[in-house]
Image (tube, rainbow, N blue to C red; front, side, top):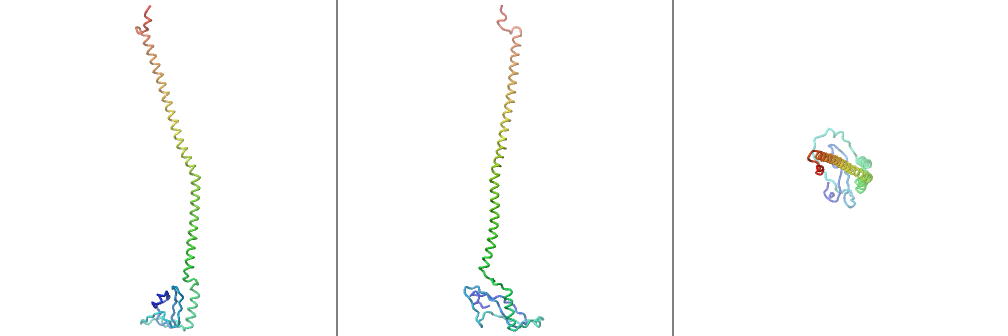
Length: 192
């Protein structure tokens, strides 16, 4: 391809090897990536061709022979059938891609926002209930510990009282025994 056309943003497509024995016109599709319109003028060079000697191909005899009118008609039909009107329409392609990407993003964002809202709502409902339950468990445990402590104190108090009563009875018994023994009685009891 001529380098000066490339510098102007013109790109030639479908340039390749031409089969040995081909007879007919040669064409190329040009795509304008440049900023300005580009008009191909009749006789203006736009393609560089190199010829090489090749061994005779068995397909050369079967190669289709095109005359100019047939070839041009075939190329027009192919371009009309296969090239979309939006071929390399960068703006439309970018818009479609952005629309798909943002639509998908919006759908995912909506989904995650809904999930987040449900989670926050559930937390708002169940957090106070959970806190209340934990408080009951902890408070209940404190209450049970207090009751157990009071029960233990009462048992110890009852034991101490029982023991004090027993000791008091033993002291009274000892004092009675002491008073009943001869010579250990009351001093006033021995006088007339």
